[in-house]
Image (cartoon, rainbow, N blue to C red):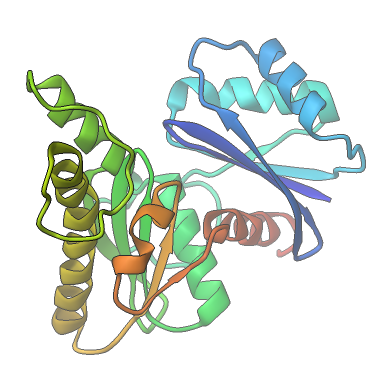
Length: 251
């Protein structure tokens, strides 16, 4: 069994693989104040499987990276690999400064291209909304980062006196007839329209079509309003497994 960990700003997602098959996933709320002992208790309470012989961590929360590594070591006696520029990926990163690329975006890109073997656009809707592109040659060539749905809603509510917090659910109509529907239209449908237009512009810029993939915690809020997107819930975890295999089994 291989354990992969995707530590995001809001949630930590753990995936357990038996060879290439994802057999279980677990979600833990990201808490920057927790110690390795506390995370070890949480992990051991969630994962009963003890026959784990490898682990890889991807983290966009630097303060938790080594804490999670220590927690996994305490529970499973493993020395986890950490996604960094020192690891092999088999994917060329063709951006201005490859060291700036987030581990989650790299992992998602590898997961998508490994699965589909064609040009891909991955839209990952989490704390931030990220759209990134893998060209038809399998190169990571860049992307877009903007505020996520939750951040957008919080900024709107906290910066105004009369607007209310609403569920992030798309309304039936674009034209809102009340405050709730108007906010939902602006945040949820506005996000969907933005994603569709970015996808169209990206294909125009590339000169060819791409496989459109959506993932992340807010994906279900917008997917019904996207054009030709497919939902790949675990594409980041699958990419982490590929990185683990390249660095553990290949010479």
